[in-house]
Length: 130
Image 1 (cartoon, rainbow, N blue to C red):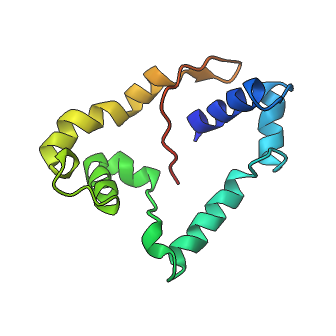
Image 2: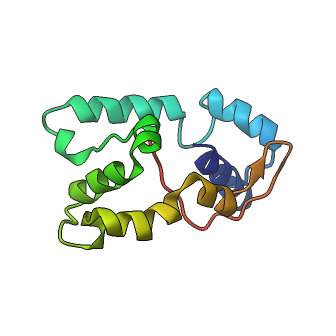
Image 3: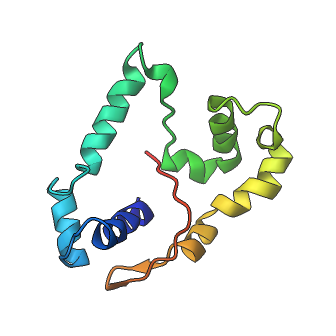
């Protein structure tokens, strides 16, 4: 979430005309004053869609705790959800050798460095997780 939050700050600062500090941006984001709404509202809407019989097959909820305990299994679930069976992301060994290194926490720290005092961003990719 932090990487996405930081990317949103820089995007709105560069492209959206947001001129306040990072600290103020955080306060505005928590208070639902940012253009795209609050994270809590997004989460509430996704959870409702996941329970709705008309839309539940269009939503895949992936918990952070599940990724920490079984990242390969979660990647397989995402691949199955995206109907990528028969590709390299459906093989457990290919996931372990090709995908896990790219989505590991260590790699995210390499791609998206942010210390709250002074933010530096070098993200090139983003994954939004619930």
